[in-house]
Image (cartoon, rainbow, N blue to C red; front, side, top):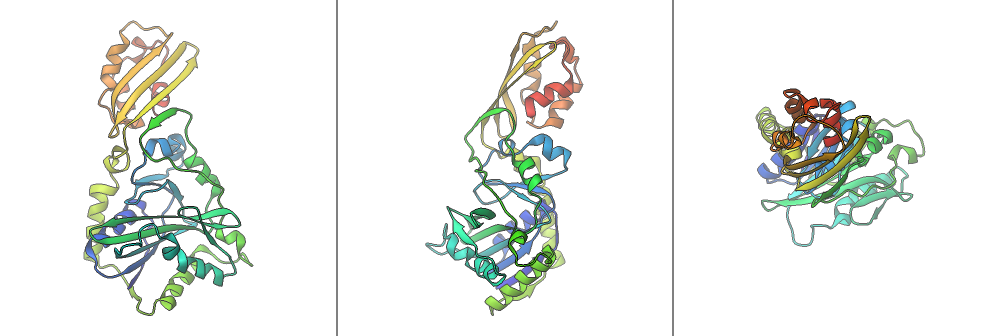
Length: 328
């Protein structure tokens, strides 16, 4: 077993590292790592539906899609992530009790009683501190989970709060629950997240005598960075891989009501209709045609609208206002 401390805090790189390890190593692996402020969405989720786009943009929060299913989670530097990779064996997939046993035993040693609840969550006193997910790939299995030690609950709520639009999606929606930090349940509160991670690392060394520390080579880091650049940091993977969904949004402005209905497929606007009691000197269908094919993200829509006289279509409307209505 290889025990890896991944000291990168770049979410795109860290998710790429998981894929690289599961695809290129034969050994059992345990990796500990942290992400700076990031929303990590499940493989089957509609990214737009899971995040508050405005909050994410204003707070410079990264958004990345992972290989495993399940719901969206928020990572920050107060959260420790663990990844376990091993050969796939019949009966292990969805066996969360098996894969979380070491973590629960470790916490018991700190005086904290944690239990597996529902499908894949770890709880303390009925509050969630760890979400876990799994995937099978090329005969190998990966289990990973979060360990909220001292995360900013405000950011969790802000980033993952559903936005005000009504959307219909074929993706898997996250189920929000009450959360807690491990640090709040320690008999003492002087442990830093770095100390917690270090203790967990040495606990794995003791629990698994065959475990040996391993540091990624420069060649391996370069390959991971290439995967980061080509896949995990791209809009196509993080947003474009979202399932088809529909959006309906409306707002009453001083100049009239504007009601937008659109369908998004693989992250691009495929159909859009704009209704309302507003005025304009040009046909609204021209504006709709201009927006079809645009990536469903604020900067792409702003770019389209910046090149036209929007007031000719919706008198009084600004590019920022219409972008906000469509995307937020």
